[in-house]
Image (cartoon, rainbow, N blue to C red; front, side, top):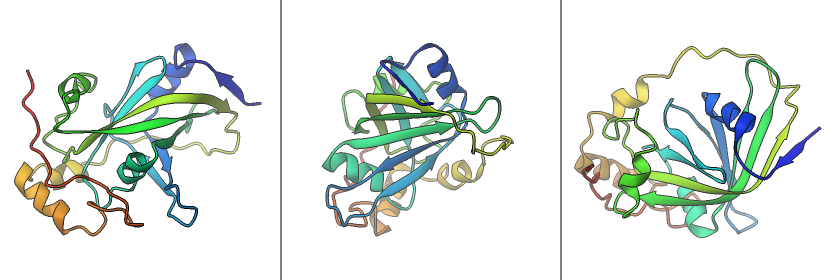
Length: 197
């Protein structure tokens, strides 16, 4: 039976932080717009900031649907499910905001991700989510699967990019500056990564 929570702490926080993958879901306000569902991984790229706030790093890719939807309406759902141990699914429904490289909060937020080198994955934003509803459900039908490790392909592909070449890469992609549905996506030109203190 599902249960609602007032905050992300204790057993709930421990479960979320132990997962190697989670999923994000967003949608535009237009009922005919494209619903987006994305898997997110890479150990160390997710953090619980406080009892009602989580954040994750948004890396280079071939589109920017989540960013576009958040810029338009802020609605987002994050979901984690247990692929080992006791069955469990946790969803955080909330309001998300993309924090871009030229935002004054960037360096402080990056402090929550000490194990991530921001230069190796084409880091373009930090997604900060404020929880409005937190629920878990049983997850009885989720299969057992094992985690063998993070794939090295993303880092090996984007580690060779500079800020300038990364901006060129984004400019060439059809669904980066605007979403599939034509909403504003990643602001370009991409600002350089700020220096850390």
